[in-house]
Length: 195
Image (cartoon, rainbow, N blue to C red):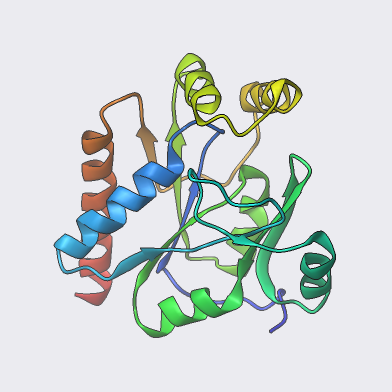
């Protein structure tokens, strides 16, 4: 499928925010909440050219294989950051759309204008967090060495423009409150369209 195609769906939910904002935790718990409310939802497992760790559920791919598949338009979206390639494959996206299922996708802020072009009716959720909390979370997960940590911290403090979000969440510590806010927002959205 050509990555320039435009797909009219409001089932894709792109979750953006700086490193350490807690996007994956919020997404995982929001899916659990939605499913408990009989709303079909899941998260997209990204393809990454970094070996997965306990903090991240992803599909590992070598750089050569990734770039080959990128050339063949096998990714709806792809980006390069922190010395790794990230990709969102077409099959899980098409499957979610066909099954009328909300699909939450963790993506880089830098890709959001392109995402809005490909999926003009997607939802954008911005997760924010104070810098000191984000830094503490990044250090705690222990994935980066000191140089990589400084790179992430520097980028975290830079302003990256994104299209206007449909919802901004402050994820400062009470995960249940953040998840409830996102879960109710997505539940109401889904029921108004597909209920």
